[in-house]
Length: 252
Image (cartoon, rainbow, N blue to C red):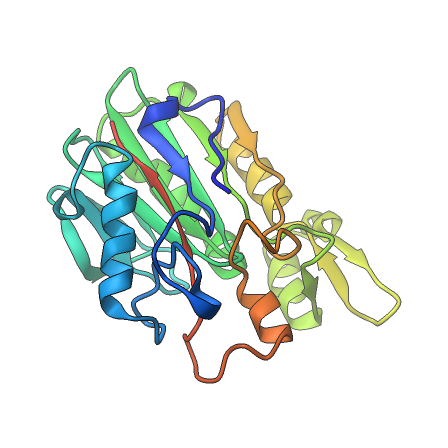
């Protein structure tokens, strides 16, 4: 199940779900995680399918070796998992930017007037440590104007599914006591964290008014999206990094 934001050009972006690929088993079907034990040729074919949706080829893609950093880089030429970062920005119409996720929030941004786009992998660590801010700052260096940026927050784990503990909450509170509002206490001495709400408010605080939030929960949407935490709870991850991921893309 793919999702497109109404504030981004429809044929220039897509938050892909788990459907439409060639992988099978627990990776069915549009898996984009080369670190999984999925057949590598199937993963390559899945990327070919994604690129073809934009009338492009896999060789046009700028893909990242994602981690939990706040590093954003300029995509001045296509790159295939060579650069370790969690955000990318380009002003080139021949490059397809992408972010893989499996519960973290994919954020796609565009200033169409000035011809600059960006993509961010905003898990909770990256979000609290500044990946969104760094992508926006790099977009401005490329010529974007903040008031003209449209941003969309794609499917990710929503508050009803995102259980967190004190150590995570404490990192947010160390940044600002106001962040307590994103943590809803439970009866189990844990909290439910509003990741997409936190990112949405962060974008508004940066001066970006045109923000759309999918509010789609990757954990509960079993048929439409991959979820790392759901796979963990179902005991489907036998070794580290062996889980499927979906992809979100944007181009000029």
